[in-house]
Length: 213
Image 1 (cartoon, rainbow, N blue to C red):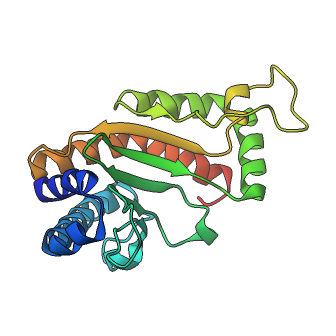
Image 2 (cartoon, rainbow, N blue to C red):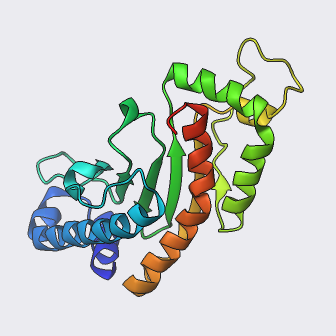
C-alpha cells in the first residue's frame, strides 16, 4: 500500500485543488491499489464467512468507499474507508471494514442496526451474555478492542446492574484492530484475514440475535 499511503501523506500537507489536480495520476494509482486490495480481502474472507460472495463485483460489494473527489471543495479526505458486507437483510448485516490512514490504519467489524434491531439485540445480549463474552474473548486474542467511546446512559426500561449493562449502553457494536499497511501485501492480507477469522464469532452472535442465521 506504499502508493496509497504516500499519496495520503502528501495530500495532508498539500490539501488544495491545485496540488490535487497536479497529482491526479497518483490519486488514480491509490484508488486502484485500494480496489485491488479489496478484491484480495474479499476473495479470502468469503472462504471464512459463507454469507459473502467472492464473485460479486467489488464496486457493488463495497458499501462504503470514501474517495477524494477532484471537484469537491477542500479540505479533501486524507483517508480511505472501505466496507464489505453481504447485500442482505436490509442492511442489518455486520460489516467488515478497513480504515486506511498513514497516521493509524485499522480493521474493524461493525454492527450498526436500525432502532428495532438494536432493541432486539439488547434483549438478546441479556439472555446470551455468556456467548457474547466468549466471542469477545476470541476477538480480543487477535488484538481487537471494543469501541465504546459513544457509550451513553442506560436506555429507558433498563435498570442499573442489568446483565451486560456496559453493552446495553452502546448505540452500535464495533471491534477495532490496528494494522500495519506498510507490510508486504501478502503478509498484510494474511494478518487481516487471521484477525477477521477470530472476529467471526462476534459477527455470528449478532446475526443469530436478529434471526439472520
